[in-house]
View 1 (cartoon, rainbow, N blue to C red):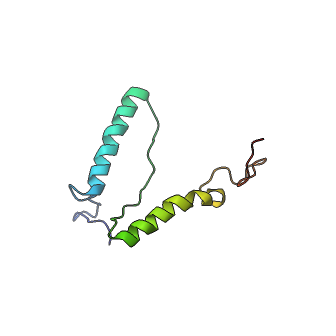
View 2 (tube, rainbow, N blue to C red):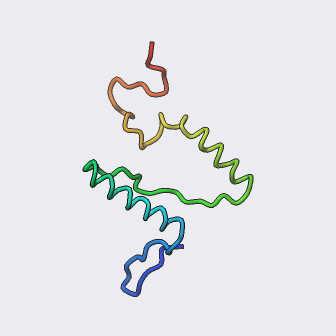
View 3 (spheres, one colour):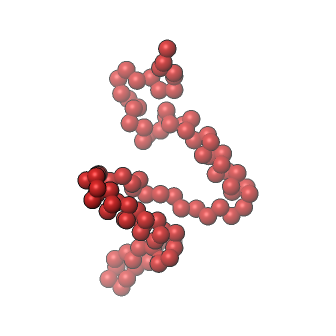
Length: 95
């Protein structure tokens, strides 16, 4: 289901009081504070995944994902180290 639209065709954003609206307001307030105090760059992930945990099976699936997903980082397209010369991913580089 898409986002709701005004009659002008512009997106209206998340519904007032929804989780998305609360997170958006929090991010806006924190970003303003950071910009004011630290003259910082954008610190937020561009998007996020919103999901309501509905039962134990759902919670267990998410728990497993959180625990096992970091092992996939060495193969992740978002990993900036992939393809860097001299970098061997997935192997301990210490002594």
